[in-house]
Length: 282
Length: 69
Image 1 (tube, rainbow over the protein chains, first blue to last red):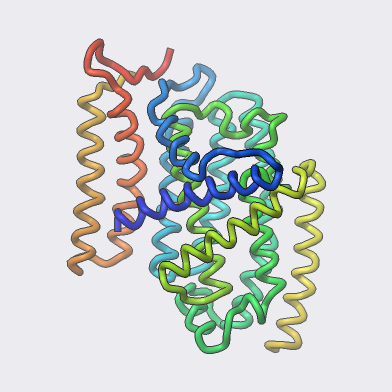
Image 2: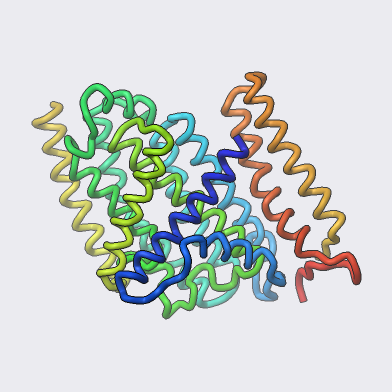
């Protein structure tokens, strides 16, 4: 199990590297090699590290451990075909962790990044509605049951396409350099990550790799169905390519525009969910 | 707070040991997945950070990585 966890982390980092490379090529830049994020993680792990004088030491260190811990838990929920609600809970917990990263540092950039991560919790609301639609179709919130349903009835990507679109938007909001990546906007230096450097940042990179793997894995499991490992990995790469195109051709929005669009999507999803509950599966 | 390479190495060994033992016990069917996952959720972050601290620390001069001004 530890081997799968380590490989998933490395593959997640590789996916983030592919994401960066594709964005660069679309923007006519050479871009870094695809394994750059793995090198980043290793590079940071060799840097001199300390805790800033203004930081809360316990929170500053603890939040890195929690960040890796919660996505380790999410990985095992995915592997065991557990509840989608637990994934949702971990997703929301990640927001609190991002906030903790920012607040613990004592840096104004980190604090603004933390505040923006709370604002961007609006991006999770379409996820709630997506889950409601999935439950209406499959009568279950267990990932394993949802995959069984799709084996019999076909992928939810087709039958519940708007729900897949909403969840795609949620994943897009978590990808770096995306239109909704307001927590990492450059006017905040590195946002909530600004003061977490060296080994702390290496830990955060591990969290990001694992988070990317889990989010893409959940999307494929919930909207495509059961896949063999090669197809799962291929599906993740295809998703990352699509996400990279979306990130490359759209500018980063201002925080209020980002929240407004996500709330509009939520409104549309609520209408769709009402339609599904009233007409398709009354 | 100061940490020594040897301390970090011991924490790493303990964490990695828990991760490997939990994985092996699960593989042999001696513990259920939730217990294995719970052990890894606790041990994996500690293992990773202690590994980084361990290979960052020097043997001469002591007390590297330097934590705090």
